[in-house]
Image (cartoon, rainbow, N blue to C red; front, side, top):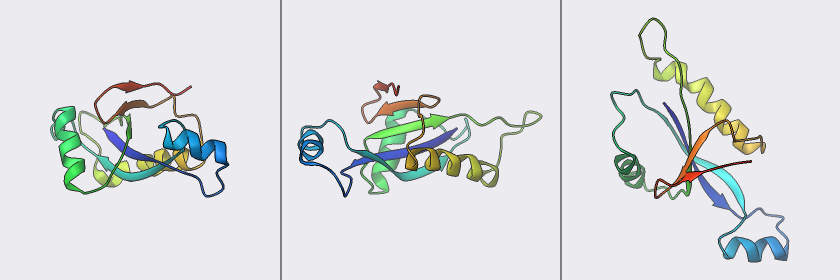
Length: 114
């Protein structure tokens, strides 16, 4: 499983309207802050994932998740997960459509992009 944790930030060139919406909890720009891969054996509950991320000391609001196929019943290695994780980060950075990923907020509520 591939996880990219995102923080909402205010763009440098934000208009006054965008600033107002951001401070009201709406809008902003998504910025990747943590990326990690986990095998199904390493994966616990969503609460455990949140706790682990808090121990890293990085604030985030949304996590996007994707699956990565193994081969012949063998899970991919972290090295094999690196390129797909980087592709997820790049998709966020360039503003690509994120609807192909599963997404949740910190409380575990699903988020729909679209």
